[in-house]
Image (cartoon, rainbow, N blue to C red; front, side):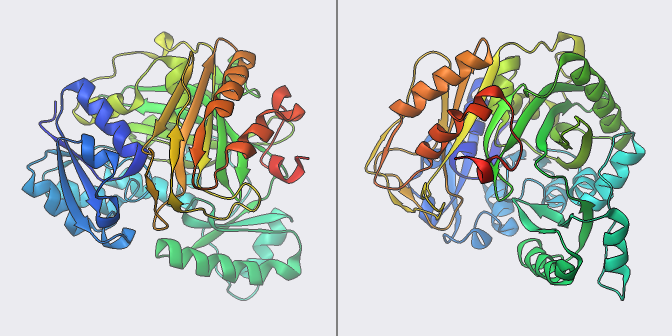
Length: 444
């Protein structure tokens, strides 16, 4: 096992990794920007190193600073969390070169899965169904128009290195194609450093379903069932639940077996998530893979009893998976709400100081957060304040507990999305489990 782990992240995921390391008896090193000097992940880590000014590109995205912090604290592994450098093949390669274990997949696999066009091709070859689409497409004469016509409108333009809903444009009419293409390219270049995009057939109001996998370095791969992440705003997830109301046991088994074979075919290791869109006829189409732990991993932990972050660390330390597929049993139901610092009316950011903070408790409730009374929500970072996760023996009990917890969650001093979540989970279509990615557009 590792001697000491540096956590190359901030906020609730940094705290989450610290908790996993404490249970494994591994000391931790937190890194922080000047804006995060008094954050909880700094307080609860065994050591802490300031790595730069508040802006992310000068601190949490500053690879030389991170590696320097790792070297001066003598760590032998780095956990990247999610976001920031979690899916940076270059960062993983630098860690490898410096003799530091990157807790995630190998650099070559991260690079393959990070290029969405190449990932589509690899998963298609591995036997997963994909949405009709193209490889990287250029605005070269009539190439763009021809590709779109062959797919059929509406189409969606996606950045190959995309994430978080950036570099994405939906086009319903041919005359809007080129303008949307150029906008997506510009946004992709700004966000990801590459303007490469590709086209896919746009599915109207599909479900977004993802499978959690774990793969060790000894050729063992298992899946932990699926999560439904269809409740989204501008391609950003708001609510996730496991298992999905749209997946039954036989379908889960069939898809899970295909996914395991696909992961073996590319030599995937560590934790990862294979994501699908599901059309109204129930057809599944691979869209992308996230080569890291997901924000919504707690719902899977609730229904499987497996600590995914601890398994990440064990796998990186070259331990074998402790469970086989037939030992994975899904019990009960879990739902997560991402509580954000934003206006419940127009979703505009709401940075500022939290003047009162009281998270809910009680049976079946978990809150992952770095917030507290007097905590300053910085305009420099993501607006996520807390993840509220409810568990029940069935979906009805999970919903009842989530309703109760939302009522008892106190956050004052800033605007939050608490009431938005309350409205969503009490909508009749959500209660029925009958919803897609366009849910928020249609909610009354």
